[in-house]
Figure 1: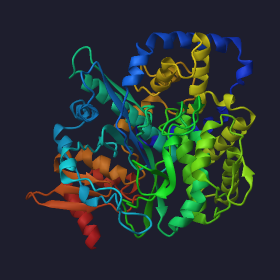
Figure 2: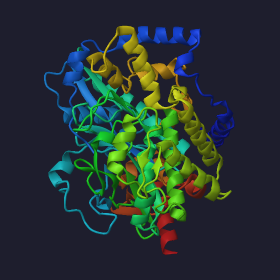
Figure 3: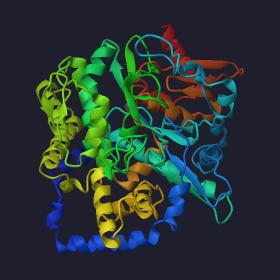
Figure 4: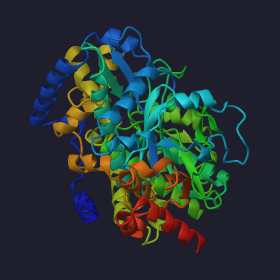
Length: 65
Length: 497
């Protein structure tokens, strides 16, 4: 990417800041969102490491910084 | 500014876990898959002469930590990247350091490029393992058994500011910023008070206010004084109390608001106004209060919620930053800072697409509800860990990002670009571009030096003690239109003339 292009990205990014919108509170989730979350949870059930118990127990790191 | 991220690593179905060997395999594997750089470039070594990690900001040399021995350094794997960053094995973790960045957005970009570099190396490393083995890498800070690995930030500051002034002004900021920068963690560690879920991954590991160590008895403010630049002009503030973030919004704000807080400290407008009575206890308390409203005690007896402390810094920024200092990015950071504080005040749940600890909390809540799991269930901890998995098909944060559930600030295209090209407005431009252009002529490099191999085999060391120099604007034309010999000659000529 050229410098001009990087600058373009930067400007666009800064223009886009108006977009930030809070999500609806947990108590008032709309239906579409709940459906979305359901699909996501289905996905998680599929991809979560099998044998969570064993995996989590065996995940031991040496302390770093 | 720049960040250093230590990643957690594990090999599935390995007979025995050897994190040092696994880290070495992963870091080395990156060399084999960097098609863009001639293989000779990968033999460039790190110039340790420029390092003195045990120098202390308060003016004395370290006594508590033993310097790394020769034997250790010779086995360490080092790699300087063409994006100006560094990628190596630190202790028993792969570590990626971003190049020096001039603003929060570049910092975010280069930290994200690091995640891709790790993923590319992970895939290459897996090809060398048995079919049933998998390398798993987490961008998090704990194994939930009391072992923590770091996500450090570095900020360039003026040497003129006394270190005590930095401690006074920064401590309340760092302790309270976790409500924005926390990555979220199930449970408690290191003998801290039990809890189901807390805001910060690292808070439990900090045991004192100020000190030099980074691995045991960790201090909230680290005194390492190793500027990697002209030490008469600069200091490098080494912040070790942060979490590894996945959320782009969290990384961007972490770098952005911390830089602003340091600018305010340099201006002398913070002082001891917000000093806390007991910062070590406060950070653990704030980490356990998911409402962000519980008050902590200031040294002068006032009771403030962490949101109020952050608001006070934001207000100082709005009052004291000059129009020149309020660049478009700084302006954007101020706006997002305010947005986050306003919404935390109403209900942290409103930020469930923005901040890591809230994104993760929402996911955990929905998952627990579906299966009826308690907080201490292994599945819940697994989900917590897998949020930080860097694999696109398994990493839960990445899945959320791809499905549009979290806020994006970057395009994938620009992150890929940042794996291969340095930022243009710091000395990383010089380092990265030299490595790309003259791989055969570079003997070694460090943050503030490059050693070129001369025609007769002699070595020429170029010092880069000014982080704002070596930019595309200053050296771009020269770098792209000369040979390595001409470059060294030109710079030497400049230096003597």
